[in-house]
Amino acid sequence: MNDYLEIGEVKLENRLFLGTGKFSSHTLMEEVIGQSGVQVVTVAVRRIDFESKEDNVLQYVPQRCILMPNTSGARNALEAVRIARIARASGGGNWVKIEVISDHRYLLPDNDETIKATEILAHDGFVVFPYMNPDLMVAKKLKEAGAAAVMPLGAPIGSNRGLQTREMIRILIEEIDLPIIVDAGIGKPSQAAEAMEMGAAAVLVNTAIATSEDPVSMAIAFDYAVKAGRMAYLSGPAATKQTAEPSSPLTGFLR
Image (cartoon, rainbow, N blue to C red; front, side):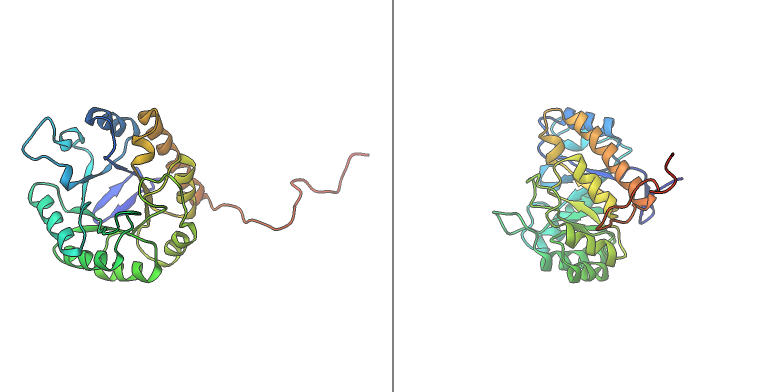
């Protein structure tokens, strides 16, 4: 069975999205992309040196990948819009991850400004992926604003603390008719698998892979975990029960 994640006119087979910050080198990042088979790669526009071939991170992203520039560094909607437009004008394409963050301690997204930026950029023809603090009403407004998907955080960026917002993410998956892509905080492959078992459409991982002792092996592990979690979700997990139930009948024992 072909199980694609369809966003716009794009069909994705791999549901592991990769962030490109924190890698010790561009060549290591390139190897991680190749070995894990990821198809969507996000890069902060402020890290792209369009004037340099050697230092330009884009030179290490394979042509088969979909580039999703992000607006990291934007403090309000207007800054995010400007960064997104610069990225597209420079050849970054129409996909954009909206990050609007003015909180410098916990790096939590500004949901109100994110909604504003989403509406403007969706109207401009961008395929918009807003990073947001999980909240049902905000997710509904993002859908109305034209978001292609919703990207709730699992825990603060780079914390590797896992699905601290698990219940809120579950509500979004249940109530929002858009792909829910869990972004930020996932620290282990098992946590990625759990997100996928809940019904998340994809997960975006960076720190847990890039700062591990063996990023290539860790990326492969995440790839397997995402696939396993997705298969478990599609298989329909058995219901949980409060009391025990025997695996075999208690009648018919040998005499």
